[in-house]
Amino acid sequence: MSPLLLYLSLLFSLITTIISFHRRRRHVISGPPTYPLIGCLISFYKNRRRLLDWYTALLSQSPTNTIVITRLGARRTIVTANPSNVEYILKTNFPNYPKGKPFTDILGDFLGYGIFNVDGDAWRAQRKLVSHEFTARSLKEFFITTLEEEVEKELVPMMESLAETEKVVDLQELLRRLTFNMVCRVSLGAERCCLDPKEPEQQLSKAFDVASTICARRGAAPLGVVWKLKRLLGVGSERELKEAVGEVHKAVSEMIASKKEVMGNNNDDDQDLLSRLIEAGYEDVEIRDIVISLIMAGRDTTSAAMTWLFWLLSSHRGMESAVVEEGKRVATTSEALEEMKLLKACLCESMRLYPPVVWDSKHAVVDDLLPDNTPVRAGDRVTYFPYGMGRMEGLWGKDWFEFRPERWFVDNEEKSCELKRVCPYKYPIFQAGPRVCLGKEMAFVQMTYVVASILRRFEIRPVSQKRPVYVPLLTAHMAGGLNVLVKRRCQSKTETR
Image (cartoon, rainbow, N blue to C red; front, side, top):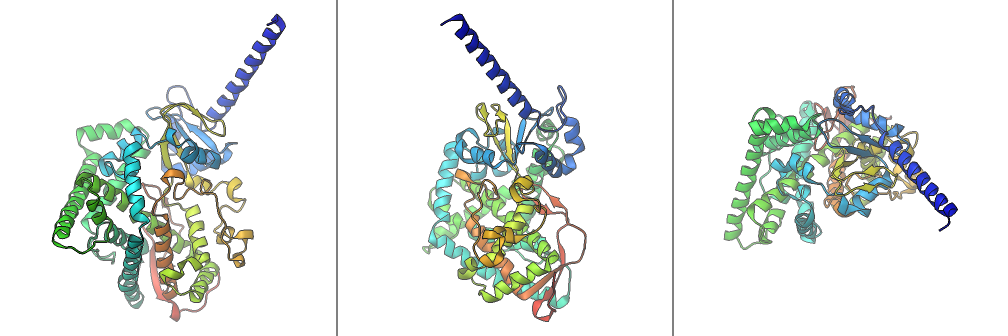
C-alpha cells in the first residue's frame, strides 16, 4: 500500500472514531445534571417525590426521547420513551435484556421464582404452562361465568344499596376487592371476600398491599444499600416486609394443601388455575410462587385502570353519555363485549394517560447499542417508560394531555366504528414481544364488562373536585382512593359535558 493510501486510510479511521465518540458522548449526556463520583444524585434526591414528571420532562427534552441516569449507589440506568428502542429491548434483542438479578433481588422475597421474577429456562417452562392454560377454552368459560356471577350477584346489589342509602364509597377499594375476588376464584378456586370497603379487608389482601408497597420502595430508593442493610438487620420496613411475605406464603400454601385434599376426594374436574398447576405436577413452592405472581398481576392493574376511567368520564360527561348510549345499543353480555368499541377506546385512552404499570426494567447482559445510538453497558438497567410515552408529543400529538378516546379510531372519528391497530411498542401497556401479558384479553373482557354493567345502571360522581394524585408502586393507584356517590341512572337527568 502506498504511503498516501495508508495516510488516507488512517485519517478516515481517525475521523470515524471521533464522530462515533462524539455521537456516543452526546447521547450519554442526555439527562439531568451529572457530576463526578455522585452523578445526578442531588437532582434525583430533589425530585424523588416527583420522579414521573421529572423523567417525562427530561425525556421530552431529549432529541431521542432517551436519557441516561448515573448516580452514586445505583446502576447506570437508561430510560427510554422511544418505540424503536422499546421494540429492540422487548423483541429484536430480547435475549440481551432479561429481568436480571438486580430485579429479582428487589422482588425475590415476595415473588420468589414466579413467572414475573425469573428468566431463562425457568421462565420459558412457566410461560409455556401458563400460556397453555390461559388459552384453554375451559378456563375462558370458567372466567366468564365467574365474572358474570361476581358482577350480577355481588357488585350490582352492592351498588344498589349504595345508591339507596346515598353513602359515600371508595370506588377504587370496591373495584380492588372485586378484582381480588376474581383473581382468587379463577386462580385459586378460593372463597371470595366482602366487597363493602367498610368491612375489614381480607388478611391475604392486606399482606399483599404491604409486600408490594415495600418492594416498590426498594426499587425507587435513592440508595439501594439502605434497604439491603435494613434487611440484613431485620429492622424497619424490611421487618414488615418479611412478616407480610410470611403471611402471603402461609395463606397460599394452606390453599394449595386444601385444594390437594379436595382434589383427592373429588373426581370432578376443577376449573381453576391452581388445580391445573397441581395436575401438571409442579412442586408446592413453584405453584405458590406462580400463583402469587398471577394474583399480583391481576389484582390491582385492572382495578386501577377502571378507577381512572370512571374519574375521567365523570369529568367528560359528553363522552360518558356516548358510552352509555353505546351500552343501550349493545346488550351487556360477555358475547357482545367486542361491539363496545367506544368503551374499549376509552379504556385505552385512560391507560395511555394513567398506565397500571408505570415502567418496566431489564438488565443488559453484554454491551450493546440501542437503535437511537445510545450505548448500553453490560449490567446497565434499561427501562422503558409507558407513563412518559403516553405524554410524548411526537407520539400522540400536541393534544397528548387531553382525554380523547376518538384518537383510537381510524381517521380520528368515532363514527368510523373501526379501532386503530396501534403499535404495541408505542403503547406497551401490556408489554410486548415474548413477554407480552398473557392476561391481556381477559383484562379487557373484565374491564369492559364491569364498566358497562355499572354505567348502564348507575352514575358515578366524585365527591371532591380536586385532581387525584397518581401513585407509582409495583402497580399504580390513586392516592387516597376515589370517594364517590352512586346514583341510579334512571333517576338522573340527562347531563352534557
